[in-house]
Length: 114
Image (cartoon, rainbow, N blue to C red; front, side, top):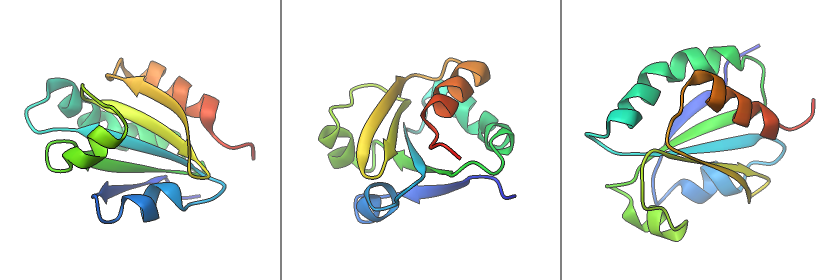
């Protein structure tokens, strides 16, 4: 089975990548250049996604500085922030990156049933 895929989200493609998919978890990673915790997560992302092999999910990475309208749309004030969506509905939120175990635990808790 394949690893979950990471996409670059923009104001133009956000609804298509995040709000329209059905039956899968969409994790939106709001990040920014020069953010130390964002860089730590980015370095860990390939390993995290490989641990979720076969999961019905995707990660959409949104540069919060380049797409401020999206950050404002969801009332975000700090980065990294991870918003979790399923079937177009916001179902969870993680503020900051607290490490691999925590991130994987929250994501697995919100994955759709097999």
